[in-house]
Image 1 (cartoon, one colour):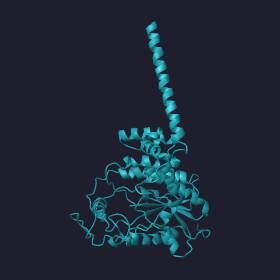
Image 2: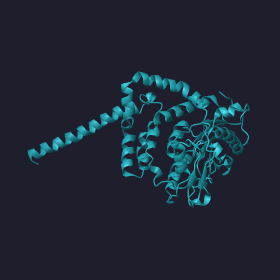
Image 3: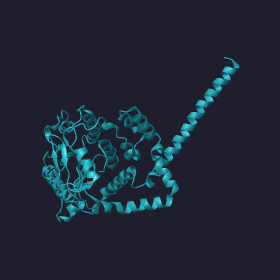
Image 4: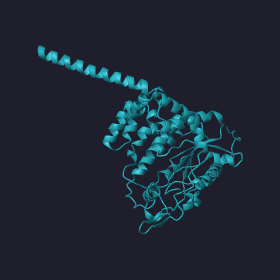
Length: 377
């Protein structure tokens, strides 16, 4: 090897070493800030990550106040019920229900919520999961590519999750984005972090306010009394007659959730549910905790069953597992009327009140007599 070759080789080695050290320094700083509780403790509480973390923290704290008859519900905004409605009945409930659901989430986010909410997989008497259907109807081509999951679960992702989490996306661009984000969390927190640096005092005060009050706000929240009375759908033409004075949200949710042409049934949602519900169920294999799937009311006017052939059903397959129970498929059919909905997919005040009672009764029916009467906070 010539002298010039040796010099070039030495420079290359120094460059590689410098790159390695630079990345190690970057990763170390990122880990110090974002893999400890330093930054997650001051997250914007109204952000997707902040909401996820507030709910997790609230429910972790609540566990200390209840005995063995604790049931946690998890789902998205369609799984809407009220603990206050149940408390106002003035009856001693057989089971205490808590809610760890969050609008916009799906089974991938629920897996990470439950993993840290219940590390031993034995804290709850049951986990009640709200789903739109027991059959897997594809609505859109790629349910696995919802990038919101990165933002919901970022604070919960461990180094050991990086490859599995990023590989669960099918788009190469999203795989890279989620790999980079899960590895270097600062790339996900960047906008929030800069906003914190600009106004650290107000952010800390806001976080403190939410930690003190968010639980009460959720408990006392009263849903809108708006209704969809007057809604009609011609299923032959998918023509919609909206209630007088309907707003854009009501129009959009009716069209997107109900009055839409069926998508091609490729099995994408089936595969997604098999993967992420499967991970949840695997965590509870051998656990005394029951996993209860509940088919929610299908909407103010349910789509006809013969509108699309649904050849896949991951949830019905899961029902063969020892600790998995499917609630009555038609348990909540009586809510499928326009007067119980504020838009095309969400219950209104009357719907939430009725559903809360029905939910508690269905869970008590499935679980049977409780071991003891739970104490309320």
